[in-house]
Amino acid sequence: MKFRDISLPAFWAVIPAAGIGSRMRADRPKQYLDLAGRSILERTLDCFLGHPCLKGLIVCLAPDDPWWPTLACASDPRIVRVDGGSERADSVLNGLLRLNEMGAASEDWVLVHDAARPNLSRGDLDHLLNELDGDPVGGLLAVPARDTLKRADRNGRVSETIDRSVVWLAYTPQMFRLGALHRALADALVAGVAITDEASAMEWAGQAPRLIEGRADNLKVTTPEDLQRLQRTFSR
Image (cartoon, rainbow, N blue to C red; front, side):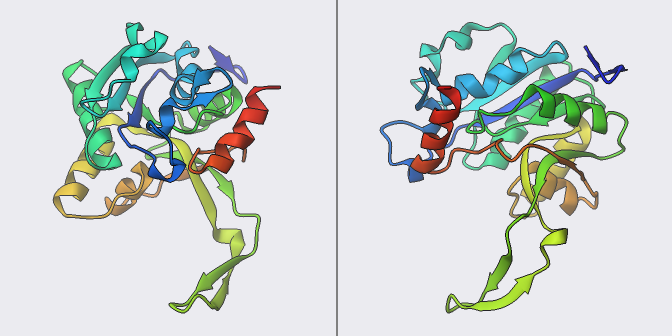
């Protein structure tokens, strides 16, 4: 695979998908909701399974998940299912442990991607791989804040206008070396640190992940309105 005449690095992918997505008010976890004829999770996996640099993919699921076996991709030999944890960080750590058991090297690149972010473009994925290959830390896709940002006080009133030029919205994939990410997540969880994404674990470990600008339409499905918007995109 070539991108701008530069070879892209091989990588593993970890997809935490053990959550239930309660804000969707649906009869199943949001990753199994229909998106133009296929589940959100299937569409999320497409971008990785279609990439020639993929070494393998870990999907982290609830132990009693009854929907995964019904998907066609569940029998794909490149996908390994592992049990997810109570929080995203627990699920990702379980996935990294399985990669270790499978013989993945400490210096291998691992991309962690939200299960409910189905509109990742091949261009953004290649751009991330190209920009971070050789980086000493790794990084993540992100989008610069474009709206005016306000800090609220405890009464719901504006206390400050924040300089948006230094604020980015963190997206996924987030790309780090297997060994470094494993250590950062494990140490943070032992210390009781609140970890909201992989970059925050690396930050807590004293690293400064690099921000790689991606497309704003790499949406995460969180509300019914998000799903409606993506339905229009995938139905075109």
